[in-house]
Length: 306
Ligand code: MN
Image (cartoon, rainbow, N blue to C red; front, top):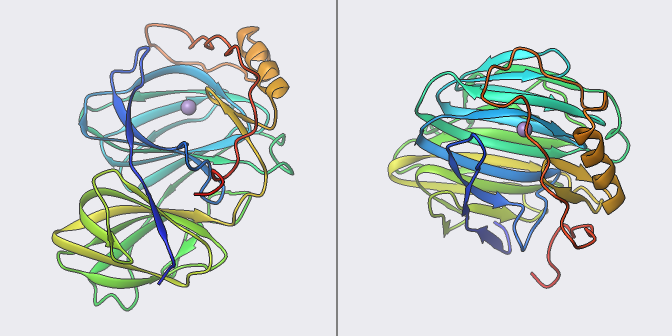
């Protein structure tokens, strides 16, 4: 059992542009920037209408797409084209720069979009892309009441081969009705549990729909308990990333000037981000917003005092 659990409530964010979806965002949060290396959590659906995100740039991060329902086609400037379906993960590594488009090929989307901040040692390395279908495994000692699909790292005896740059974990977990399990976790990791559907408590703390429960390092198991509808949750975690990051628009960097340089390179259509071929949407690429008037400062991993 853990000392304290911080529950972050989502805020609704309309994605704007040609996107028609509203998402529930829990990271970054005013009280918290990182869970391990995870720096961004958007949750959408069920029955989100559709997604059409024109080519846009990323740097300093990996994007992780995980769906509960629907299909999305990914195209990137490294030449990867990959349709993703429920139970599969698309993981795109930006290195110093990449751009991609995402277009749903069905309606009724339901899933998450997550980012992992790259550590300083590899954040300027090359682009990469992994796709993996995660098998559903029964969580040991759960009396078959709980299953997991592990899409990052290792959990419950299952392992994902996709490339990550700091020790981390990501998994979808399903609990049958009235389950109560102790899920073994890595004590060095920070963890967070997102409630997608049904009802769940984490170490006795009940979550609302879309809430993100944050658990400090130092625990060896999480007690997960579901109600009459069972639960579908997402677990993310990892070793704390002991680096202060600056996040702005689609970029993760270390200071204001790096953000300005990334924005300038995207607006100049430089080779740093490359180009997507085969995207047939209404605009060729998303323009960067104007820089804010303020000098961007690194975000602390957690707000002091919280
Ligand atoms: Mn993106």
